[in-house]
Image (cartoon, rainbow, N blue to C red; front, side, top):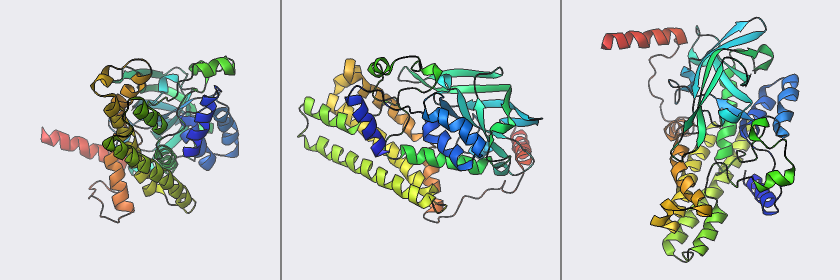
Length: 365
């Protein structure tokens, strides 16, 4: 991921259009390469690599965030297609995406992890409503997505029916290792037709490509800001910059370790550690930027306004990619061998689990 950022920075420094990014490149393509059939790979992966199709992640729901396997969005088979009904939330860039990585319940009569399937889902169709959620930066990245009898072809079921939890773990692994080094493939240019780039010349598009889609204060920019504000010799600033550099390097090494362990069927807990590293990187880099700008930074305009955006966006890093609390649980249980919390619903079917929860709520009244 560090090499990816360096390549993109080199493109930008020469005024060249950077390679297409997006969540399709970060998560969808590697997931489909791992679990898809040759036909699915041929149909879905090249448009991602060529920047012709943008993807979002349709995982979290209002009642299934940290407990992702508790999702209730349904997919019901109808011949050679599936009918999708339910709701997703916090779907980054769904409003400008063409496809979504959708997980839905295909069998409610088995334990919750066993009845989920992973679909390559086309968003532009009747029965799909996307509502953007404006964040405190004033911009829109997250969305609610509603499904009311939307259709997905059986040919776009990735990894097999009811095997979606295993496929989902691959997607989450690629996400966490991708962002764990302090960056990712999510920057501009926006892939697909909704990004407005496909019909433009490369030269014109390159002029309008922002440097960072996710408003993360990059280390070289912080060094330049420290020099410009006359704080490059400030011992407190230097100490924070040194700490940030250490976090960035350990993030890169951790991502490499996760990749190496994945070759032998491991790496999940290491990826969780990488995701925690991302939180530290994002928050510390934004903190340093505002330390350098001082009180005036909160009203900064022009070029420095991006650092304010980074500061306002930083709290989201504790949530996206899986909450920090869940990542600590994964690392504690899978790496340190600490005992899991008791689960009274273990072994129950999803439907029975829901019936018990409803009964308990009724009894509580």
